[in-house]
Image (cartoon, rainbow, N blue to C red; front, side):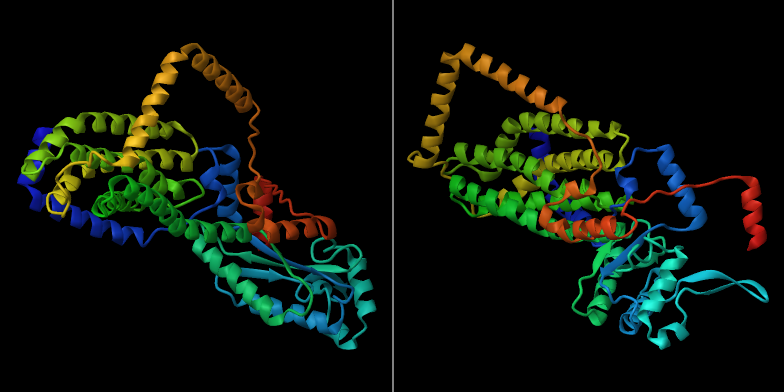
Length: 470
């Protein structure tokens, strides 16, 4: 460790230059980070059902859609049908919307003198006739789109917008859902519109993740910074660790994006975990430096001594922590695997930063060198509390052992009752999913239900016949 400290101070220009270069490169990649909350990120690698879904999407296109539903006993009136037609037309113009189906553009098979053909479910002539009851009875009698475009009683309807395959681009889904919402605001009357579909759910997740990427690190930094300020009573001893650990987080996410990864519901907390876990390295060095420094001692020599003394335990704890996180690489789920690998990488990078950049920064910052004040009442109270706690534990070994076993049994019993499921609404707070939960309930009751079930038929004669018809 003394050799590492000597190397850092001897080649400080190269270390600072390389760090600046890595930071710039990381910034370049981090600004390109994308969010992907598709089902693939939460699936097991090479899952047969996932492979079948990917094959289906490759053959027939994407299956992402947004359902816009509303109710009313006037949905077949000329006014409402005109509104549905305007909404349909405007949604068709939105970027990344492949097709739209509604009452005003749905078609049915029709036989006439020339043979079979296609005709509008609701003709323009019927709309001009303004006989809403006749239109309603005619549509309901067809039954082709029952519980799909309209409810059985004819008092609810839906507009379905299919999206082009967007892959890992959740930002594009966010733009589509926002554009659809803007269209509804333009044309809506007093009735309530319900939006449902996987893109709507992913749009909610996308907004929350972007918000949390900004808010959570700020909250963590504020709370931990306040605690450090109370302990060290020196603003530089608060700014320094956060600044350098922030660089570590930036490098980690830069490598994460560089390797072609995207954020999801698991990996978006990598930054917070690295910040929490790796701040300890810097605190150990700062605390040791402050507690052992003396007036008149060469700062650089003292820093080398601190690194030599505190470096080995920091290295051992960091490496064991990194190995623990990297063990998640054995998971078959991509998001879990990426979380473990890149959090472990962040721990290793934090170790390197703590042993090199932190001593360099401490050698030039205006940090007091007279050591910790002996009359620091706050720290004296904490030390006294810890001493009393240790004495109590040593004097009550059996009680502590029995209590530990009971807590362990209680925790294991609870762990055995864990319920594994993929309820997407369970990932978010109720206030975030209230609108989509209401939409799901409405579709389940008024229309054909919100559950999606795809069947893929694969046969040579079917494929040949489809090609012939095309």
